[in-house]
Amino acid sequence: HNAPAKVQAYNIACLAYCKIKDNRATEALSDLNVCLQIAKDNQDLLKQRAYAYLKLKNYDASLTDYDKLIKLDPANPQLFVERAEANEAKANFDDALSDIEQAIELKPLSFDYRMTRARILVESQKDKLALQAFSELINDYPDYIDLLIRRAQFYNYKKDYAHAIADYT
Image: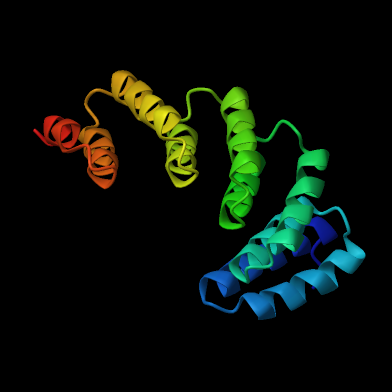
């Protein structure tokens, strides 16, 4: 192709994303590694490779790529979210929480980031903080009924049936 290198890299990153979604992460990883030999710091390629590694459960390699991406673009909250997900998958809950807190600091009004924090808190069995995160979300988004249901499910899981019933009704 005669397209500029940046456009070619972006197209390869998009192709890799499609291959990963089509359960062809190993193939995508091979393509990305070849391209990254030429365009070492291309963020589109690095991001897709980190994602491919995550899908292949190679968490250390995924985290290494996210570390590099964050060094290249430390003001991008989405990179912290994605590294949090890699840390969460590896059961590095403290690191995952640190990353999601950094993302929230960069973009404090993000509902999705705050929900991710609540989910990580539940998974890491930090019950008090998880309930606080759900309660804050419920206060900030009173019309979003799904939040009450999620908190009720949490109470139910913890066998706190009185609170679960209150949230379900």
